[in-house]
Length: 498
Image (tube, rainbow, N blue to C red; front, side, top):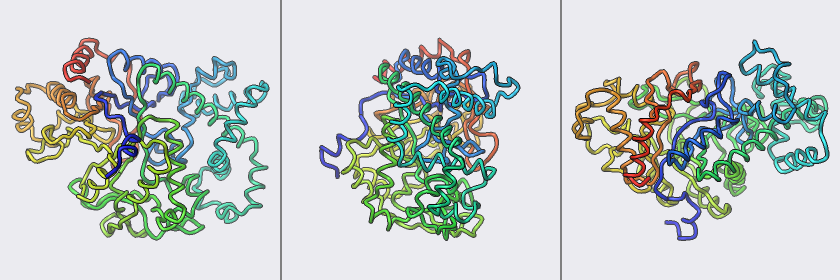
């Protein structure tokens, strides 16, 4: 078990409540939201109604599928989250000069490019000093990332393992020549990161002034086609050409007869042990500059990973391989001044995984949508919750709770009604029942997806695991906020001391 000093580095256990909402879901005239004016308004909304935590998904640059769990970098912020209004306020962007017919990602990209051009044209000593200081501070990842993105554009967005051999293998001369050739593009990409981090720190300060903590999310694995892997292959089980003997995933279970083949590279844990897990330390340090709390997605993978032969199309023939997660966490707690982690311990969790979580005093998760299968031993039922849990009605991977309540094939409605003691005449009453259970839970932190607060149906679902296409696109409108319902939730905050 951790000693008192180590324990003080973990998540603040004050009893409180939060809301799960990714910034892309904020209101916007464009297809998705950003970290501009609406983000400030959302922080004010949280503060007004007593919420003290804003949880979100990873903020990284996404691939074309827009999944924030398969990013092009563990460090870079998604430039599509940059507030264009903020750039316009500073005189670097003139939206009237950008075609209004392109109200999409291309429009955002064109706006950022114009802002970058104007930034460098109008640059003064103070701005030059600020961006140079930023570039120097983040050089350990920024140089590789900027060149990586520039090369992806040059090679028509093909993955790095299909680039010419000398670039794929990072030949020093070839890399230097590429940097010179693509210098203007590299400068633009660094400008975008400078702006993203500047805007984010302003958001963080505003949240802090409103007593709102920012709760981030760290995918346990990184994408094969990412700057992380291209620049630092020694940390992964692959050769110089990006070929891997095994890939990540999870085994067959009640939700899938063939399991899930994620395809991420697995870590070379032997190399990581030799380097005292410096790759992880650097990654966590970067996240701690952005967030007050960090969730480790698929925490189970820090005890053992499901290792699937690369050639297999499904996860059936994989096997569990233990990894030195305990040694890694011990080293991280030793080397970092704080490590406020939450373990995503959903799915089939073994005693060893529970022991790993508890040995470092890490909170776990309970999800009420998983609780009502008719089994009173189900660990997600409120009477099994513990103080160290973070309780949710649902997560970004779940249906909205109203959508869930409308589909009785996914839960035992009679059991829910008997357990709650309420006569559930309609689905909205079921949603209120789960919200009340979450608020009243002994768990120190209760997090509600914003869709549940707004009482939205399945059309507002954020993600359906195992599908590609219509995910990560939901946005809300302030007109959907019902003042009377917010008063009910505010009352729950008072009654249950959140």
